[in-house]
Structure formats: structure tokens, C-alpha cells
Picture (tube, rainbow, N blue to C red):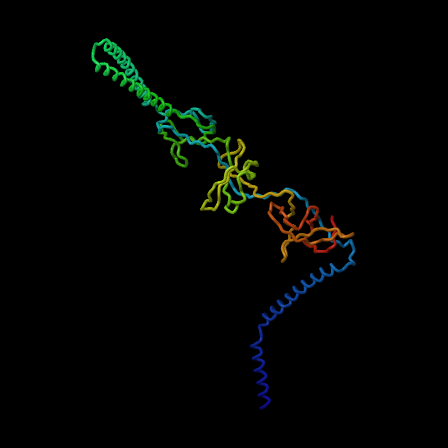
Length: 396
């Protein structure tokens, strides 16, 4: 009986142990993770030891030196550009309008795409009523002139008689007043004729700038009052393509770096052209919607350029003479900052040395090095990824 009880106790203990044990799959996964962690730590230790041994082992032969490529550091001019989108615009865009109101179009002397010169006749508005008023004004003027001649003659006669004691002073004064009244009417009539002629001239529309007729949506018989940009109202638009400019919106954070006179490169990829210019205008306010300000630069005449053409604008916002630069690809970073490897001749051996650097502006693949390198240093530009400080190297 005692034997049976012991056996039962052992079985219960085994069952309880079995219930508390981990799942076999989970246990194996945990063991595998542990081994991988130990393997990674071991590999890291091996690399560190290899590097330390390589530094201390002076028994290595020259023929096992690491093969690398170097580029000598040269002091040269360095520039940084802001690259933003812009568009071509015209300095002189004329929206034609009659000077003294509108009128019905009687004749059009141009067509869309024509090049016109300042003072060239564009179209003629109906001036029939104005001409009739001018004729009437001239006829009235002639009548006044005739009346004035008679009034002057009567005044002279009356004045002579008065001097001889014939007639009355009232008659003389009345004759003189009539002359003065007619003289005023004559001057008023002459002004009326001039006004009518000016109105008639205003109904003949001329170009006020040299340029190309870019828009012409006016037809004979329509009532033309002038052009309102951005509307469908009948209009004539003349663009002077001899005076073009590029307009761009510069982000607010560059406000202190872009100035009037800053150098500009304008790239028009559509026509495969690049133009050099300078900033000629900067707006004084910041656009509240996109936090930018307007910059403009003049463009030279080119028949291939058109207003509203897209452009890449590169504004020079920084430059330095005798700057030290290197390829941005050669720069590495550790917990102390940025560094590069340089090739240094030490005795009979060429050694890789780690040099801490501080960098400035980036221009494409080149970056300015503010400190850490000097002209003449040989930066390792090929094979630098697998070298270490103090490693024996050789150039190609």
C-alpha cells in the first residue's frame, strides 16, 4: 500500500512539471534568438579585435596594403544656389483701350500674331456723329466770325461819330459789348471744334508699344470699350517680347540671403537654353498664403521665349573664393561628428588617417569644408568605406 502511494505522488509531480514547462516550439525559438544574439556579439568582438590587431601588427608586408583612390584637395571658388520654379513674363503688356470711351468698330487693320510698332493704326471706331458735330461747330464758327466782323465795323463807325459829337455814349458802349460777346463766342466755338477733332482722333486706335498682337477678340460691328484682363470682353493685347523677365516666388526663409543684384541662372528646358542675369526687383512684403516674396530678373531678347513659359530659376545666395570642397559621398559620420579619410605619407608607408571636419553649403555633389582639410590634402575617394585610421594603403 505504501509503494502504490509513492508511485502516485511521482506521477502527480511529473504532470505538474509538464504543465508548468514551456511549449517546445517556444523554447527552441528562444534558444535560437539567444544564439543569434551571442553570434552578433561575437562577430562584433571579432571585428574590433581584427582592427586592433591590424593596427598593432607591424609584421604585415607592403603587398597587403589596401588599394584605394585619392583626390587632391584644391582651393577654388564655391557657389550655392537656391533652385525654385518661375515663369517668363513681359515688362510691357498693353491692353488697348479708346482714350475717350468706346464705340462701334468700323474697321480692323491688324490680325493676331502681327508685330506692330508704337503709333501703328490698329482699328477705327464709328466717328460719323462726331464728324457731323465738327461740321456743325465749324459752320457755327463761320457765322460767329461774320457777325464779329459786322459788329467790329459798327463799333468803329459808332465810335467815330461819338468822337464828332454825334450819337450817344450808350450806343458806343452797346456796340463794344456786342464785339466782346462775339469774340467770346468765337473762342468758345474754336474750342468746340478742337474738342470734336480730339474726340474723332480718339476713335482711331493706335498701338502704344512695340510688340506682338497676342490677343485679338474684336470684330467689326461690335462695341469696343477697351480691354479688361482676365475677362471675355472684347480686347486687344499687345506683348512686347523685347523686354521679358523671369518672375519667381522665393521662400521666406531666404529673405536675408537673396538681394537685389544677386546672380541668377534661368534654365528654360523647353527650348534647352540657359541665361545669366541678376535680381532686379524684390517685393517688400511676404505673401501671407504661401510665405514667399517675389523676385524678378531681366532676360535678354530671344525669339524662342514666350510669356508664361516655365523656367527653373537658380539664385546664387552664397559664394566663397578659395573654398575647400570635397565630394559629399566621401563624408562619413560617427558619434563625434563628420569625418573623411585622407592618405598621409608616413616614412615609407602611405597611411589612411581619419580627419574630423565641419561642413558648410552643398552644391550638387560637392560640399564646402569649413575646417579639417587644407589644400593639398589627399582625400580617399575610392575604397574609403573599408579603411580604418592607421591602415596601410596604396594608390592605384
